[in-house]
Length: 126
Image 1 (tube, rainbow, N blue to C red):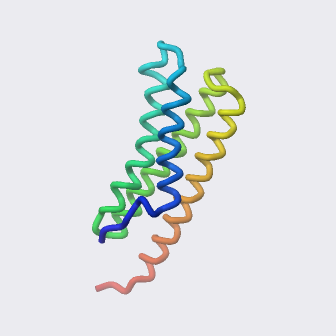
Image 2: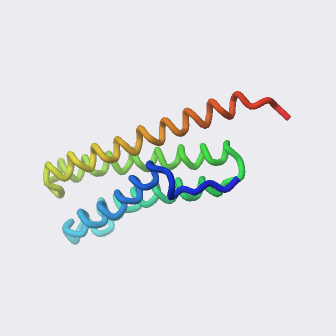
């Protein structure tokens, strides 16, 4: 069952965060090129791309699995933003804004996962 990820608010938020993370990490020191900058970028991209991947999975169970992975990547990115803020690699205001936006994506993903899991458990067995 194909789903259009572009219509999902949570995907739009995650996608916007990818661009924002790339923008704010561009100014990280060179010694962080393969460290925190790379890890944070990969976590943000993973969150959005797993929503996309899940949208083309055939079963609800596979879709929920991809959303679970996206949720894990979102929480990872949130932690990495917090670390970057504590290391003064990001200004306090930027850190706070990104933390809030990642938390919003997490809440959206958790709602989707709960709703889809509940609907799946209500289906009669074939």
